[in-house]
Length: 233
Ligand code: ADP
Ligand code: MG
Figure (tube, rainbow, N blue to C red):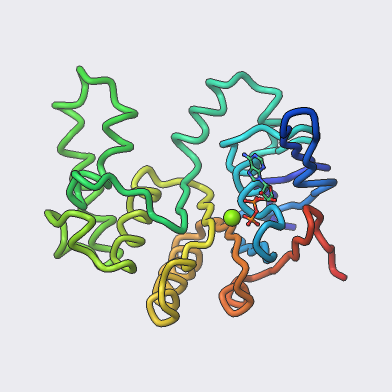
């Protein structure tokens, strides 16, 4: 049996709107084997982004546990989760979230700059730069290093966002509707990039989408509706 890298146990998430409780997720349990490409498919508003944020330790569940590589993540101190997110987790989103005034290379280097103490940066910079250029080249962006995001197409912007998410060699990549803002041809190219990373590097990918055709390209699809998973229905 393959190793389980990530597990959710009986997750619930509530948002409070004044006095009234909105239960967005309820009783969500799942296991992700290392090197799987898992997709969670559900309509808009079903709780996909909320679930991905809990799995990626960006937000805390109201009930339940997230087990990352055997550790109960929300039983650990916040700085443990911050370190894990910095070292082991990458995120890509529908709207890229690139810094508009930074070049492609600078956007990709930004996480390393934030992680490295200022005093060490002059020495560390060269290695980080080489790594960032390598990742951008692997994603077909080696010819756009000095461009600004506004000078790129949507598909190119998503490749830069992926480079930024991959530059620290995460063990799990979370993708929230990564093709949601792209035409179907460009979206297909981004899916092939994700599949290639999964197949060639064994990167574990957890993606959410509302698009069945996109979901069909994953190893396994779980269906989310009204905050609940419909297991093997
Ligand atoms: P999806 O990504 O599947 O479209 P979301 O996880 O973004 O769904 O949202 C699920 C539900 O939770 C929606 O009804 C949404 O309005 C609500 N919701 C999401 N975030 C918040 C928030 N911060 N506060 C209150 N309600 C929220
Ligand atoms: Mg969403």
